[in-house]
Image (cartoon, rainbow, N blue to C red; front, side, top):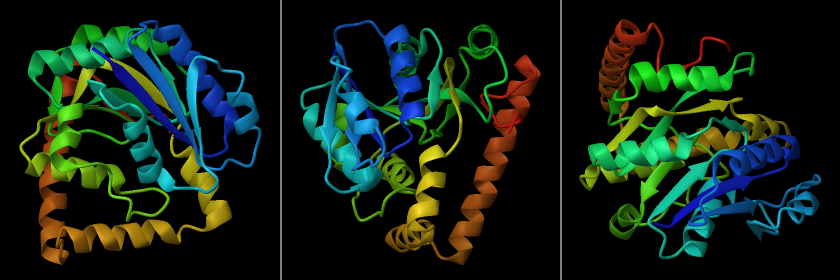
Length: 266
């Protein structure tokens, strides 16, 4: 089984370096390739990536955004069984990859995300990971994934196509992909068998300072128009998603007094 880990980056080298260090410590299989797509970084990212000989680097002369970078990674990993899309501002626990794919195989999931904690890294990562695997390892949040890290079976792209590059820079691309996958009958989930830490929107915050935040609202409008989400449909979806989330949280708290997606330390 061949696996490609695709990481779009724009500046923020210190976070990228941490992420690559985590990958080198937690992923050892020769069947796993790491592809970093540099979206025209202006800091030391380009030069420093040259020192990582086991990482395939795609360098863009302009920022092609999250969707464009992910599509480049997909094209560069033709013939792979899984593509994993990973933010650069993450830390990875031991066994995160094995747990992620084992859960996908056991429960026949086509797009799957790990459990996650967001905010400052002020806790023991491995201790948290072991706790979740022990108490919530067989728990799934069905039909829910997140854009920080998600693994996609190749057949999904064969059926629904790649990311929609009409979205600018970042935001809503993964939501659009997940919606297309659900419509095509693919199964989506988040598992407690894999755990990562997310520092939270590091690249997006940096981009908002240099490029403004208008692309977020532009993408939102495009997403709503594409899926014909009028005010009533959005309210109904928000209500249903909220009910589903509260149900997940209640069940997880009964089992382990915690949640698969934890933002309590932000």
